[in-house]
Image (cartoon, rainbow, N blue to C red):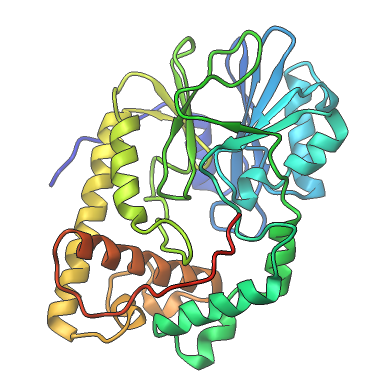
Length: 350
């Protein structure tokens, strides 16, 4: 299907993306600033944080990956808006991933700002959680999906990864669907948009004609929709439903957490739905042609942008968990698929 393209609005951001450099700090309106924060060692390269200024309140959306260099970039961007980091009064993370929530704990300590997440969002490991149990469950899950023993250490989580997750900020506030971010002079409405994570949120600022989409809708790539055990039973179905919630119009400017700004949310949502439908159709073709026994066997026969052999470590993990989410979704649509995907797990999410 030949779907209409989106309309580019972040021209400087797109140029920076092409040149593989950080985009500039930009003023999107009298009270909204876009500030890039480096995301080291990752193909996404940076997180786009957004600073919104109200009546005595200053709220930062998605502060980015925690690093000294990132903090310097963030502080410089906030200075361009005429403030210091200590002037922040609120921090909203669209979801519990390190490239979004990572800097929040450090900023809260420096400023006293509250930290907020959606009320449906979960963390993989709480302060009271048993890391050994989490790692054991993770390896069992990957083995169940058919990850070969000689690739397991490469794909599975380790203690260093869990220590990093444990250090991420716990929220002071939980934001419910349809509520407003509690800041004077701002009109940010919360929309719960699960899929990329269990409790991902988008923020709609009708007064400025802006939608802060986090990772839910990006201009160029399809967000990763993973099956995690334990976790939501059918994350891809959740994603489709929440795309319908946010794809309500085409005129507002979309401010994603990666890549560049655009308008045409309705058009982009249609593209994302079509992309994922085609991916599910490819999974069915692989099942018919190769009769795979495991999720791993399905994944290695699918089309990947740089080829299956190029996938390593975290990228390989994402590929397998994304494939599992398509299998679960297809089963929910009535397809008879014998490949094992889920089995009972202890509840370790908090």
